[in-house]
Amino acid sequence: MQGLISHEHDQFLRRERTLLENLRVYLARLNAPDDDQALLQRTLAQLEELFLLVVVGEFNAGKTAFLNGILGDRLLTEGVTPTTAQIHLLRYGPELKQEPSADDYTVIQVPVPWLREINLVDTPGTNAVVQRHQQLTEHFVPRSDLVLFVTSADRPFSESERTFLERIRAWGKKIVIIVNKIDLLETEAELNQVLDFVRTNARQLLGMEPHLFPVSARQALQAKQMARTSGRDEPYGPLWERSRFAALEQYILSTLDASTRIRLKLENPLGVATRLLDRYGELIQGRQEVLKGDFQTLDII
Image (cartoon, rainbow, N blue to C red; front, side, top):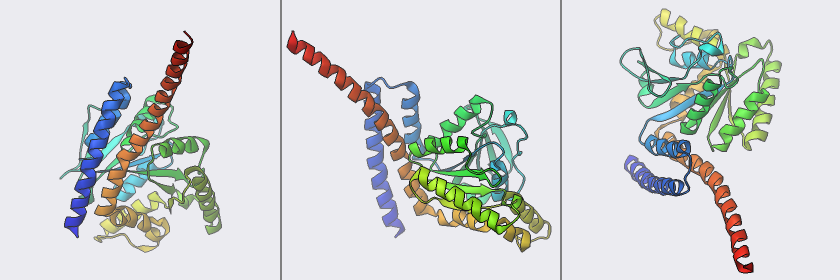
């Protein structure tokens, strides 16, 4: 079975690479901007890279807290102000190590075994006051194989979040929504109201029923730290149960198995290519209208 999956994967990979190379030639002939040509080149290169999971959302929605929770330790600094935020690329390494990249982000090596198969990206808030952060975040989204969109239970689905989700949708990305900070809500009825609100708005915006996970990243991290202190391998107890983090971990670490990651990895370039084809299809149509007018003028002459 594994051989069959690998054979099919190789076939799709070769076909997809050929189509993307052809599109790159067409963009060059149309004198497409360097940014678009570079995006397509990065998309081609990324077919050979690890699965890329990008975490986005508004500043202070709890993106970094979620990552600390999933990693099991407070490895990333949870920003106090948007001006101190930056993009972090997390990948596997035998020991905790941080180094700057030439591409305006910081690479952090973390000794977490499942990072051998998945790279994680922590981005600045989409409503951050530093425009450069916004540009960097939007630069990473087209490269992602899966987007984890974090919203806060105390102010879910703000207008800027809607705007940013529309941009993500335009790239054809698969989106998972995380409603963080559920520990701020006092009753189950309040939580259900928030989840219904997010689910309804996401369905209207994305045209599909998204995967939705309510969590408390803060409680999850506390439960994991307590388990480690007591010598246990896995978190347990009421605090862990209240965090509702288990279902999200199960999805990321088990549901996203190798075959699912391969499928999403192959779908990612198709979303980028579709976006570029739509954009330059309009350009070609405009040029055809101009040529049609020129031909009519020549006929008259």
